[in-house]
Amino acid sequence: MHPLDEAIDLQAAAPNEFKGATHPAYANMVGPFGGTTSAQLLQSVMLHPDRLGEPVALTVNFAAPVADGAIRFVARAARTNRSTQHWIIEAQQSDGVVATATAVFAVRRETWSDVEAVMPANVPVPDAVPRMPVKGMPAWPQRYDMRFVEGAFPAAFDEQEQAHSRSTLWVRDEPERALDFASLVAISDSFFPRIYIRRRRRALIGTVSLTTYFHADSALLAQVGTRHVLGVAKALNYRHGYFDQTGELWSPEGQLLASTHQLVYFKD
Amino acid sequence: MHPLDEAIDLQAAAPNEFKGATHPAYANMVGPFGGTTSAQLLQSVMLHPDRLGEPVALTVNFAAPVADGAIRFVARAARTNRSTQHWIIEAQQSDGVVATATAVFAVRRETWSDVEAVMPANVPVPDAVPRMPVKGMPAWPQRYDMRFVEGAFPAAFDEQEQAHSRSTLWVRDEPERALDFASLVAISDSFFPRIYIRRRRRALIGTVSLTTYFHADSALLAQVGTRHVLGVAKALNYRHGYFDQTGELWSPEGQLLASTHQLVYFKD
Image (cartoon, rainbow over all chains, first blue to last red; front, side, top):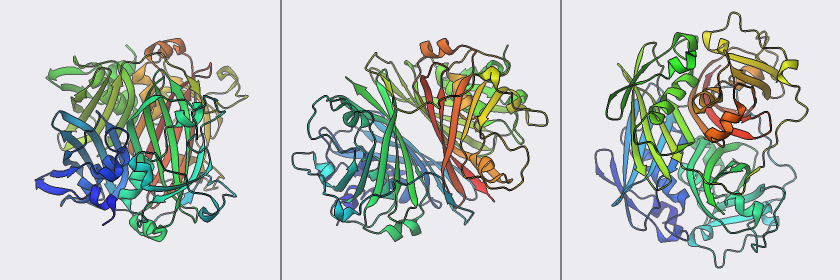
């Protein structure tokens, strides 16, 4: 079983309640990788007997540090319409709520479609880009095969401030795993905090809110399979302890699979 | 009293509960302007006796059409930390939940700050740009003074598809009102649906989720006062009934006040 599937293997415990736990394969320096927590929050809806359709939007708020160990997920459909459904989800540990989330699920129809965002051009194929070394890193980056074309995680925190924080990289689960909503959500939180790329300086950081819009449905995700997706991320603004960053995840064929935005706390 | 202040004039009804109503000055074609509903959701936290600090992130999910009339707001602090606080808010009408929201509030500290997004250059001052005519429009656009530099609302739905949906405009409340979090949230939802700019074709649309990150604190908003702010908006992707758009709101001095993202349902 893939470690991500182990991590999102929640057990129904009561109506609207699921039990799960942090997974050592996705450990961060302290507590778990937020992407895995996000995937678990989404999974509590995916597994819910009342679920309608597929996710189109997910917002996760990281309310407190998640401790290694058990997590209780409470997922409630606040509103169900004919083709859309709105969820409120809470992750709880012994000391209270550690994350909240809202999710919008929908049954999609075929319509006029078009990509207006621009996929980076002239990007070398994944095989032509070396994988980021993960030795000495926490467990979670070791669960990804990241190949940076631009804006790599700094090899040294030399405090040489960069002109911008933009990154372009190929990324997939490691070991390989066919892309689905759970892995797409986790990958949406796999962009390193932009302040590290920008300032090459240590800082205490923590994502406080993460929003992902799913442009792909499960059929499109299945077309991607186990291949890399192209990730692009950049910061918009840093001010008084918070910055935001925005990202895109593209299929190799140039379909925008997801756009993702987050607000990050930092202390310098 | 300014109509926006009337619209967000909620009455405490019980612990965690406030009563409000839609306001005819912000009516849309059917029901109210979503920006006003968002401002009301935020206001239920602003008025809450347990509130800590100022908003840094707000996500509003529009769960069902809001009917003209009374709305009940239930705001609950899911988690309070030393300098951050996480809220879950629901807007209810007689037929159930019509909107859900999560908000992150925080006490900010001074840190290294920088804008990485790029404000449009060579934009003429507001006085040099004509105001968008609002005759024949619903009430809510009449509550804004919008001056389009680029990407105006189409004068006619001539079905001439455009290359992109980008808009740049000066915008302020009409009548004038000093900028605060309530008006900033409402303005974040005032960008017209990008599909109208892009396709110049009628479509049934509805925002399903709106996320705003506040880079400004109340001191910075006070500096803007009643002047226009510069709005920039563009779409990223349209696919199978949903598209997303992203926007920025800039102070005249080039401070990024807020970044805002939304997912919109459409039917063509």
